[in-house]
Image 1 (cartoon, one colour):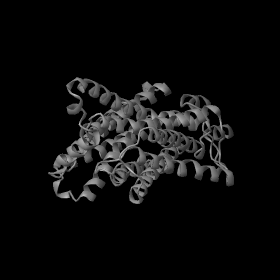
Image 2 (cartoon, one colour):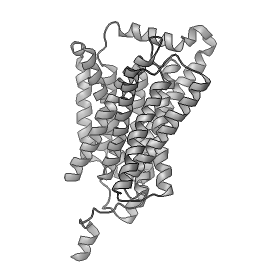
Image 3 (cartoon, rainbow, N blue to C red):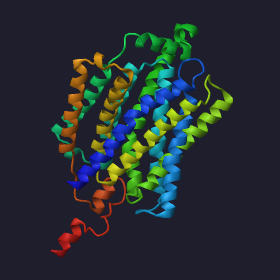
Image 4 (tube, rainbow, N blue to C red):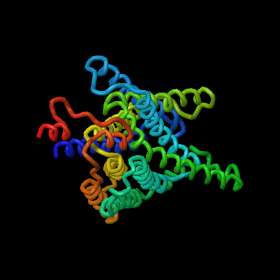
Length: 371
């Protein structure tokens, strides 16, 4: 029971942090733009710097001063770095989808609806536990996804918001379809769908890949986070800075924009730590990641509604979506595949070495041996 509470608390931190990530980053993008739109690369650089500070500097200091259970392994490094790379590439995929004419009203529902499906199927495939999936668990998973999509599709919007959004998109993207002609319509549509699919695949695979990296490091917490931070630094700092030297964008680093963007990056890094902690306490990607992808957009919508003063525009379907998410989340937690008692075989099935019991707490096999 105690471990379940720790699992819930850990992924709740991620839901809150990742739910705030988008709106806060949006403020940073706006404050860095020099043309009244939204900057892209410079806020992303700040996100990468925040990940580097929280995901690399802090874990490195703690490992040096206090140490931690587990150890480095090539497999753990590769999978953890791969997980971080998937997270960063997924974030870039969303930016690219918007650049090619995508609208948040359907881009984000597709991402948050598709990513947990990829996560669930990839986890089942990697763990070879198809027979443990029950119909009630699947029903709960579907309820979480449908609830998240319902909330996003029915979130409150001010009357002038669509017009302003259209102007911002036209100013930022140059209205490519009009300026370049209809001959580029199919190209933009192809790249738009490809960008959305890229994010769905990357964010869907993020949890299972990171879980394998953590397992290969004997359930270390700080080492996988350090690898995630390094991956974000490489993709979100080094690559954008190189790109800015070749092709600058209409933006500049401002105090408010930098602060908001760093805050967004910090929220992202803290969310990544919450996932690692949930796995460390025994959580499985098959239900941890769907709950996160279902809960984070709800937090995002509630926060955006509150800060925009749109509570009076809330629709009944919005609350219906919230109820679906909560009810589905409860079903997913209760009916998630429990698996076997941790053994060498179960550890390998989970993608790494078997988890070690905490010091001073004998595992089940030891207790049976002493009977």
